[in-house]
Image (cartoon, rainbow, N blue to C red; front, top):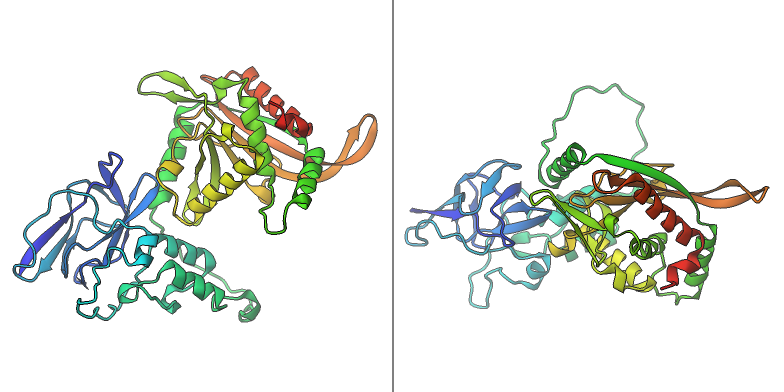
Length: 415
């Protein structure tokens, strides 16, 4: 027997460390080469690593939530004599393949002349972090999902087939509720992975940025009428235009007169960087927590193009297929709670940006118009700005310019 030390490889983009997001093996497990062993979190992306050799797990670097430096030992394997040498140098991650590669068979080590795969090992279900997140959100027990991947691994197609089969929990067939009973006990949940990143960024933003908030009421009756008219003219198979597409386009237009709000503050250099381009962040709730995918060069898109890109990047964030580039680099962010949007909110700025626009829900209510009471569709915009670099007047003026375009939607389409 000999030992093989698997060091944390360079995960790209200048990464110097990564957090252990999930262990898929434990000490004492026997694994085959290319078996998934862990998921490492770098910035906002989870990278799945696979075993570089076959053998028994002797030790691991730490617990989920611990941080490991690139080049530091991650897992020690006990291998057959001569099967491997000592530690390998830090190099691009073996098995850092995504779900698409796994489904295509890339990196599985299988070929026509290979020996039969070993039977699945008892214990933890083998699948990707994105599938685990979707299963938690859908209330699916992954042990009940048949996996068609190597050694019984559950692929994206397996999970979606399980959902389509109707075997997922159904509220209509759930047992009748029992009489209420007293409950006791507590549950401790370790703050790790994306949730810890979110907590750190939120704490840093509120600690370092003197926020000021400004809320304005918007009459979106005409905007909703236009949106419904345009959607009625679209082919049945076409995606519907959403209010967020109109709001995003109106914001892009308004920012031309307020470049100080489309900027980053780089604290290390003590400079404000104003952007000619608008890289629009779209705050998106996912099964793993809040992410901000980015629509790049929103200023170059028309209404349909912007709506399509918003849908695409939001979907990629939710199913964990978004790239690092798609999750970084926004210059200003829109956040919306949709139908849950409430009356007003105080959104937290997404550093290093200096402004964020929050969209609250639109409701019909009586409003006085020219001395008459009319039922209008009303919505509040809740904004926050970095008061160090955006004066109250300028922040309010930007929101007023946005209000004008949303209340007179023809202005959205003017150059």
